Amino acid sequence: MAVAVLGLAVFVRVELRSPAPLLDVRLLSRGLLPVVMVCVVASTAAFAALVCTSVWLRSGLGLGPVRAGLALMPLALASFATSLISGRALHGRSPRALLGTGLLLSGVGCALQAGLDATRSPSAEAAPARARYARSGRSA
Image (cartoon, rainbow, N blue to C red; front, side, top):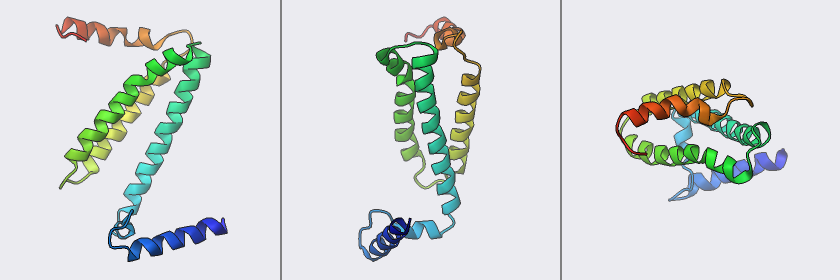
């Protein structure tokens, strides 16, 4: 623990003296620390949910590694698209609305997953949404 604290102190000192710091630690002193900590906690929870979902797909539903990976692919693609969009959308704006919306959508996703079990597949749960999408006349 002492080595970690010493390493942090050295890192902060080097970053404060650097003309082009890797991480501008001055940002954390402007009241952004609580926001950063909320994002860290939310990211940690999302990663934990991803690990649990992967284990559930493999052991609970009996999917193989490839099928489990393909089942998780929409999450990866949505995360990629969201990071691209939100990076551009945040320039010059307060992140509160975007972070709030993201946390709300994460909660909705977790709530929807709560209804899944080993007797019902994610495909069966998504069937009504796919049917509405097909009726809309768009192609997948």
